[in-house]
Image (cartoon, rainbow, N blue to C red; front, top):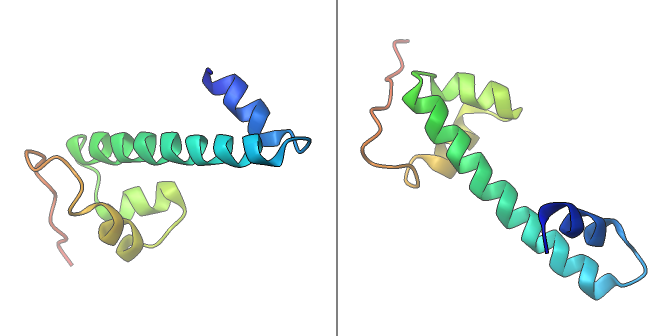
Length: 81
């Protein structure tokens, strides 16, 4: 099933079991994509605060979620204040 079909299944309330499975699949996809974008942002020199602003969360929340999950080869900018 492609992403469009998965999204349609998640929105279709006639078969809740299939819909719930589709929601789980979409959540996993969104989490994987978010991690890739956080890593790309760090590689581009963005700070945790800038990433948090882009995601609409606090700096602490994004740091807690991703600090230990990102590629260890990524150089992470340090806060200056």
